[in-house]
Amino acid sequence: MDKSTIVCRCEEINVDEIETVLKMGAETFDDVKRITRCGMGPCQAKMCVKHVSNLISEYTGKPLAEIPPARARMPLKITRMRVLAGTESHASTVKAVFEEGDPDEK
Ligand code: FES
Image 1 (cartoon, rainbow, N blue to C red):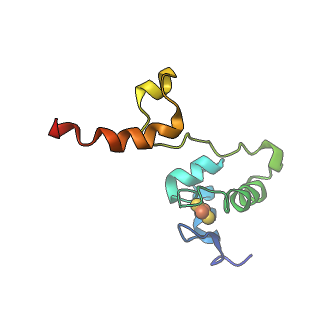
Image 2: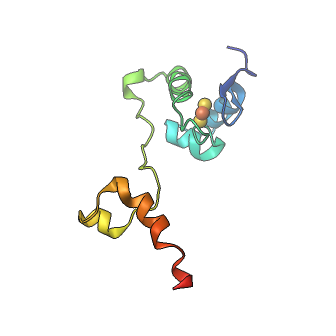
């Protein structure tokens, strides 16, 4: 792979940038992510995690199975407490928010 080959299309991170981070001591996908933003794009690393893991494996000599997977995070969105309490279904939350209107106007 050429050093200018893009590994993370979303954040436009190339092989050279990944190798630089690995030379600095990065050993996991999350290490690479924190320094380069690789994996923070709209696809949330679905496209690049495998390529980066392969580069980490090649650079460190560790088998792929020993490279920890990327840390998964919960999706963020507004959730009403009554939905969490189970007194309202999740599907109606959006409708409920629109029906409530602006709380500052009350
Ligand atoms: S390709 Fe890396 S975050 Fe999308």
